[in-house]
Length: 187
Image (cartoon, rainbow, N blue to C red; front, side, top):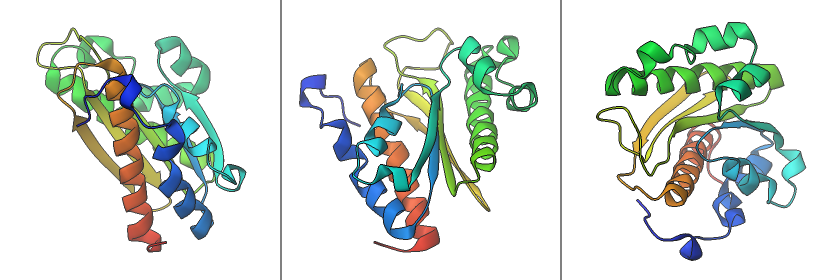
């Protein structure tokens, strides 16, 4: 994983270049729900020429208040995100809660926007975290397609918050690219 300082990071538009080309060439549409990337995934896609052909919308679901404003109660309940007593009890519960959250939210938003894919990520970017066994540099990534949802958990081992945000951005788009190519073929 990348552990460079921010002055060595590529411009955000570089990260979404391949994804933008894939989405445009295959005439696919995407929406995004972000947490620890703080809008970087959306920015990297919107920075592509012709983004209005493939980019539907995005939201940053960072806090309890933000989640309650963007998601209906039924989705919040299914995602189990508000059960902090259980979710924050230990490493296993926390990781499982994030996996459930990104799966539930990506499927809901993909259907709501009637788009081909919804990419959702949520985790902890650091530099510190307060659940025993959970280190900063963790995110769960969910990509809901029309027929299948893809999920991955990423542990970077990096404590630099900004580097983790870019690592999460990069891996999220790599997974989306892989899914698009598997389902729709190469460029």
